[in-house]
Image (cartoon, rainbow, N blue to C red; front, side, top):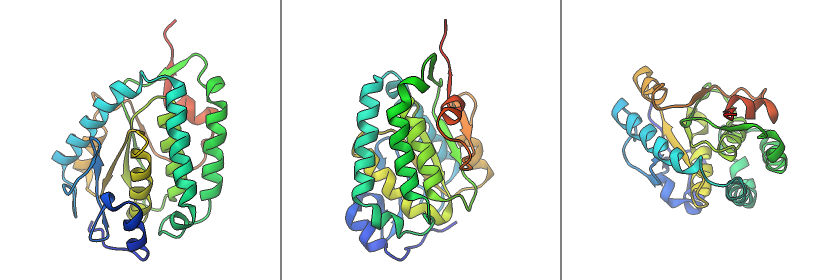
Length: 222
């Protein structure tokens, strides 16, 4: 898969220049946007990305919930600031405002939702369907991070620019997202290794609140 510049790419690049090269969204792992994986990600790069996410998970999962809430809320404020631009990008469609509102609501309720639960042993990898709307995936990403997991995302092709912008804005506030684009079965295998990844998620928009939190946490040891 070769990602090319999309309409509005220039404006997006002005907001998050670090996330693009010639209008193409870059992969992000280990705290950096990288030329590796453009235009095509390979299994070796995917393995490096998921290992970097595991390293981030080992720190993020022990961060106090109050800190995670503050970082997620700061990221949501940044997304809200650029809401109109984000909504105009391919792959976003309707649902962005609901996504932002639902995520804020989850931040407000997360203390109760996490009672008796704790983060997974490794990051969550998201393998969305090709047509998965970006807001569905963004909601899942932020809830997964909020409850203590680092997050790996294989971006649907159409939503690549939108997710690069979201990742760039969240990275500025220390939310541990890893973003990759493209690749085939070997890449998927690298992103879903059971000795590295705590959970593989297939976002579909049907999980909200308690259901999603339960899927990406485990019961705390008694």
